[in-house]
Image 1 (cartoon, rainbow, N blue to C red):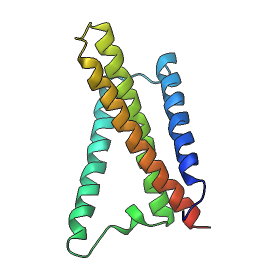
Image 2 (tube, rainbow, N blue to C red):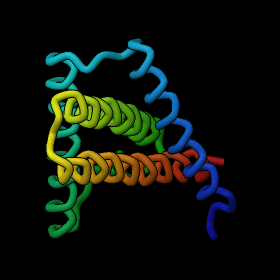
Image 3 (cartoon, rainbow, N blue to C red):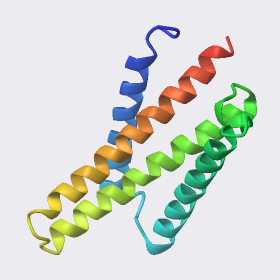
Amino acid sequence: MRYPGIVIQAVGLTFGTMAAMLLAYRSGLIRATEKFKLGVVAATGGILLLYLANFAMGFFGHSMGFINGSSMLGIGFSAVVVVIAALNLILDFDLIETGAQSGAPKYMEWYGAFALVVTLVWLYLELLRLLSKLQSRN
């Protein structure tokens, strides 16, 4: 209610990002090489550790202001997290395609679908955070 229209914007951006990443993956513009996978997993792990540290600091009355703040640093941080979340979609697409090509058992379809849904939810939440930071600056 604080930011009217933000939910529809975030949903549209989420599905638009997914479509763009799928198109980039299918066209071969972005390939899921081992170095790419290592970089994306390392960046995702770094974000996880940063969020966990911020959560733990909250128990002692402190926080990393840039994570939730609407400063330029906070907006930049959110933009970087959105990019990392979008790159995780490439890993999900590769997992699904590799499983299909290698003749993985039928139950493995759920792992690919679950991974994709988790990434989409994360991307949606991060886009909501970024949009709210941008709108709170106005």
